[in-house]
Image (cartoon, rainbow, N blue to C red):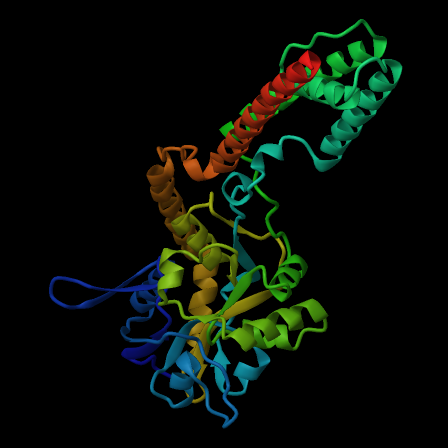
Length: 404
């Protein structure tokens, strides 16, 4: 059977994958590596194409009708749909060519913000909590022992405690000779030097909180309300999650449905970025493109995989020539032309965005970052001033008593 001279093709426009452009003469042009595939098929089989753009691939409604690209095929408004994921449910409505690609279903997630910007106690970060506990206990224990050894003066414990605390702050200390005191001075010197070095390193390159690595961690974070998770609207991913045998996948998608966390490829969020504490589930190629567009410093594509899916060209049930398309796809796959075009697109994309981010200035430390330290410093000065005035009053009162 002769191949049609004009082919009606349904697509979901996606930046760098398949894009629709208008030239100076208002003629529609397509670009991207899937667009290159369509051009290659057009030149090989000698047909012209008419593009029909949709916002989603399509899901099956309760009334038996499909939305999106699958809906156009079901209603016979188009001949084929490009780059459609193959599923058994869809096979009841359309026919598929041979598979010409395979994709992993995974997610991209925003990296946690540095604790320098989010924590009010970031200056404690250089040491773990157990080290701070050890220093505090050792400070108290040393003060108790030294005050017990020397019982000559009143308030000796507090005097010893603040004297040892001052040594931690690199203040001079004057006291009698003691092996215990020498051990404390050695420990305090080492601790202050280590803290200073780690704090300088931390300010130079602040520590980041651990990024979510897999779907199980993502599911728990979403259930706790710490993260949002979006899924592409009209994709087959949601159905696969709902029917999964593993509970964390089902719970994750229940939260997505409950909150209506669905995105179209034309949404602003996919162009500008997800924002903080947000994840997006899709095919790896799309996520890698988004990661390059948004910046790998702010987002990360997970290595965890929910499933690997095949995709091909979907034709309406009565389309005559799906086998001809399959034969041409086999030849193109053997020549690696499409794969080479895909690599070229990713190379240009990564190069362009790396050059934009290469000379980004590091963010300076702001007042918000150190306001807690300033508050502590002012509080310390106020307490010291009150203590100084109290000592003056106490001295004058004692002096008057001695006269009488």
